[in-house]
Image (tube, rainbow, N blue to C red):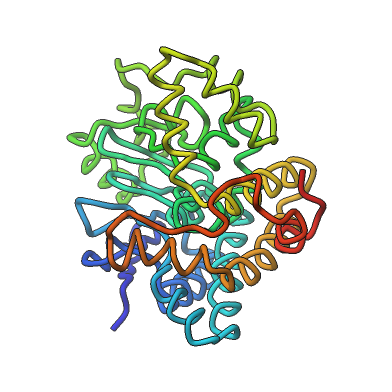
Length: 336
């Protein structure tokens, strides 16, 4: 049984993500099926545009099938882990290089792998129901799916902030920081989708985009506190902001994350700022293969996604106790 549905009409190929019980988390079959479909459509002169939507009213795509990856890690099945991430990143790369307009309609959660199949595309439409996040540090992992390329290219500090804290942002915020290109109200989204399916010019289909709401992302603070890649310095600055509720909320998010993942993430984003997208994907694959062998990955996924007690026992428990050699081995470049 496939968890995607496809259709073609009026020059538009549509992929519908349809794994609602898992909030469309990408399992191996979905990745493989999407890659084959997009490859065929990219070479099909009868298809001018690709549209990616969700059958769920709760999520666009909640990420990768990370619980399955944990099981592979417990079983010592390194080959399945490499296959999963290698094929996922190959799909994301295909989206980034796609030769035709690629449109994602995001009306619900889009996290981790859900951003890999949307942010790399040309047009990302969000609604007020959209919730965007890269929450990997809380599960002992790191922001991947090519995010080490696009995160450092957001406004100053924004990529490091989102990558380290896993902070969730709304649809209008995603447009403000460059993760989305258009905002459409949830009430208008069906009409927008129908207009795209009918083959209307994109400018006409998206004519209803826009919002009177404004982003509440504190860009000045983000740029002030997260412009550096020194995690200790970031935490020190935030902790020193006595009376600043936002800063203290960020401290809480960082303190709940895996210390090892925080250092890996900072180094990966810093390296990504100096790398092309191909190099970022290669580095991420190597890092994913390494970090999934660690205690923190197994423990983080257990606490957040399996037992859901939200009480991971990360080891080491503090940033100062993380072995720099481990970070350097995972990242493949000197950490710091």
